[in-house]
Amino acid sequence: MTLGLTLQERIAEVEERVSRACAASGRERSDVKVIAVTKYVSLETAAAVLDAGLMDIGENRWQDAAHKWNVLGDKGTWHFIGHLQTNKVKDVIGKFQYIHSLDRMSLAEELNKKASATGQLVEVFVQVNISGEDSKFGLPPEAAADFLRGIAGLDRLKVVGLMTMAPHEGDSELTRPIFRRLRELRDELNQLGLTAEPITELSMGMSNDFEVAIQEGATWVRLGTVLVGHEEGS
Ligand SMILES: *Cc1c(COP(=O)(O)O)cnc(C)c1O
Image (cartoon, rainbow, N blue to C red; front, side, top):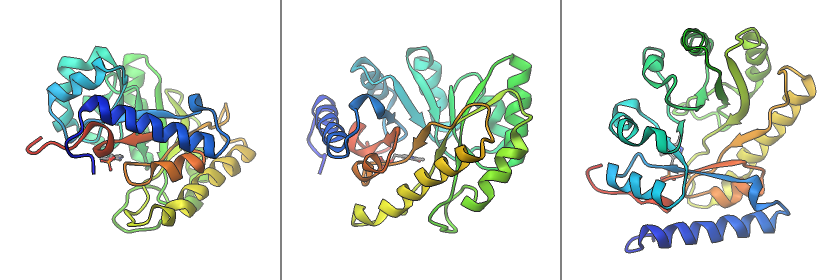
């Protein structure tokens, strides 16, 4: 589908589709931010993505991201979107401004500890497994409120949003209830007032389902294949 297009053409096409999804659901274009997921592409392509003006970069494994970050780290805002092992926190802290995959207490404590040592604040998304698939990381939705209570005392963490991954469906409409549920959960958690400031962000939607996610309230979509492509051997 995206074969043969240049990076510029893919960016233009995605921009068009994001704008249309916003318009179709009465949202402002500025309500939705795009993370360019560079995990499938080379350092050169990641550099071209930043040059093209996409400033939010997503990577899901430190081992794969390290080289790109070492060269390009100060040129953009980095989002850690993959499962984060507790012993890898030391590698990503201070480098990735956002962590999208906070899903357990031990990880929260380690992030807080390492951030305290460097005196910084880490902006986190709590990952929720809405679909209930065994293969997906994330807290069950019914555990989210207690989790927020549990981490309330960790003063180096700022919960800015919720994140989910939907099952890969042939028909993106099938993902709609998953995204809707994450939005409802955010609103329910805000009703309970468990965070110092309301949780505003929803990190949801990937190449195959981002328009539906936008219609259901996504504020960050994470786009790899459709936006930056998928290179062999990267
Ligand atoms: C790889 C990845 C993406 C992007 O995937 P595409 O389908 O290529 O857009 C988004 N989010 C997470 C957590 C990922 O690991």
